[in-house]
Image 1 (cartoon, one colour):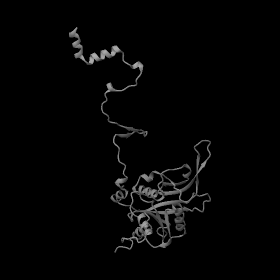
Image 2 (image 1 turned 90 degrees about the vertical axis):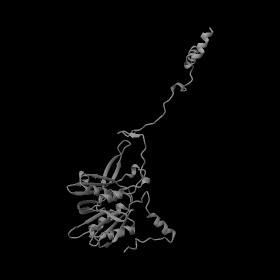
Image 3 (image 1 turned 45 degrees about the horizontal axis):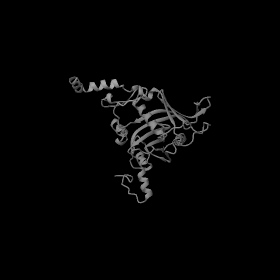
Image 4 (image 1 turned 135 degrees about the horizontal axis):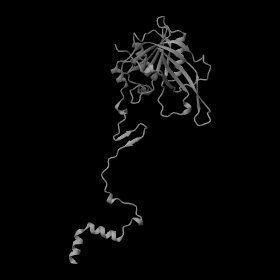
Length: 311
C-alpha cells in the first residue's frame, strides 16, 4: 500500500505551490540537509553528541528530539519516511545498547531511498562545552582534511570518506575570502580507528602580507571505530553520481594544456599571399624608378618584344 507521502499532492494556495516547487528536481540541486535522529535507547553521551554535531551543521540540519524505536540496518522504511517528510538526503542515527554501545549510523539517500550506511562506534567523546575556547559562528563552512592512507586502500573507507565529505561540506560558494577560512574538521584513519577533531583557525601577525596560522581545538572530538557497512551496488552508485547533460562542460576542439596549466590553441588559416601584403609606408622602402621599370618589364614580356622589333 502506498503511503500518504507517495500520493500526488495538488497545491491549493500559492504558499503550498512555492513549497512544492522547492522540492522539485532541479539542474542545480538545493543544499543537502541532514536529519539527526535519536534511537529508542539513546543515553546521555549519544544525545549530547547529536546536539554538538547539530551545532556544526546548522542551519542545514533537522534535530529530532523524540526517541524513535527503529533499526536502520534491519528496516529502512522509517528512515525513508523521515527523509520524505523533512526533505533531507543525509541522516545520522544515534543509539545505545549492550551489544553496540554509543552507536552512530551515518547515511545518505538517493531519491529518498537509502544509498549508503556506515555504522561507527564512539569510543571517546569530548563535547563542545568541555573545551573552553571561542567557537566559530553558526553556518561557517568548514575545511575538511583527511589524513591516512587507509582512506584510499579499501572500498569501505573510500565510501566513508565520501560520506563524511557529503555530510560536513556545507553549501557551495562561488568566492572565498581569507577571513572566512576559520573552521577545520580533521579526520585521521589509523590502526582501525577514525579520529575526528575540530579546530578554529587563528590568523596571527607575521610581519608580511601572509599571516601566521595557528590551530586551536574547539570541539567536539570523536574517536570512532568502524562496525557495520551497507554500501550501494556499483550500478546504483554510478546512477546516483550521474550528471545531467545540461551541466556537462562541452569539450573545445584544438585546445590543450600543459603540466603548468598554460593553455595552447591551434588555429587553422588559409595560405597567405605575402606579395600583396600591405606594409608600412616609409620613404626608405619606396621603390626607385629603375626598380619599377625592371619590374614592369619582367611582368610584361610582350611589350618588351615589340620595342625590340620597332628598333
